Amino acid sequence: MFRVAVISLFPELVEAVTRVGVTGRAVERSLLSVETWNPREFAQDRHRTVDDRAYGGGPGMVMRVEPLGETIRSARASLPSGTRTIYLSPQGRVLDQALVEELAQAPGMLLVAGRYEGVDERLLENEVDMEVSIGDYVLSGGELPAMVLIDALARLQPGALGHAESASQDSFSADGLLDHPHYTRPETVVGKPVPPVLLGGDHEAIRQWRLKQALGRTWQRRPDLLARRELNEEERRLLDE
Ligand code: ADE
Image (tube, rainbow, N blue to C red; front, side, top):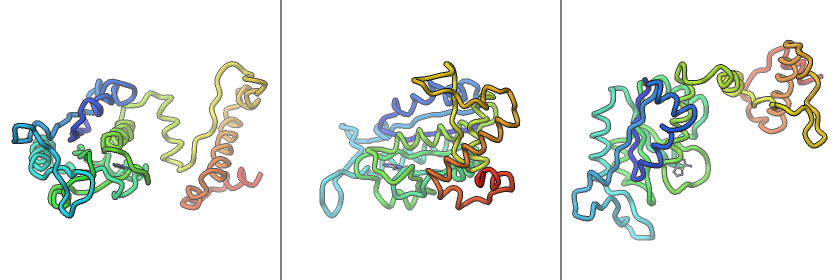
């Protein structure tokens, strides 16, 4: 079982992943556990304060050191050793499938979702092993990035995906290409027919057509993915056709 603990001021947001879809099923099948820790419960003062003004001034608050530090240490004590503490932030290493696969090797992970302008830098230095970004844009908290990471990791747990889903997952991670297009009934939609090869039942022709579509799309939309990857003989032929 892959064990995730998430530190967040909005645990109910993160807990939604345990109730729906692939992640919900992974929890149900005990392939994944997600527990949440709220720093507000570790705040000592009467008002349960978790933020404070920034030294040096300026707008925006910073998450206070003591409640968040206490929460991180308590959460870590409940997790297996070898579990990394990850802070979600736009300053982190940008998430891709290779990083997801690397993180999946561990027994679990401790995710710290910040709010406000961020957390005290010394807390990051002392308690956090790595920072992860989900892309070059700014969100108002680390909860959605934490949920992105949990979803990507849940899919990699053996038994988490049904047969149909595992095929489509392979088409991104294993072969490093974008997916081919998909079609279902009816055969014609606003005058557009399903590509005839998909109706013919020739499995080898279908496989080649899908690979060609995946290559063409990747070449058109994400040439950077092709640049990082060698083409085999069949792929080179399909791209040249
Ligand atoms: N927190 C705010 N924006 C973020 C991003 N893009 N990735 C990870 N954590 C974040």
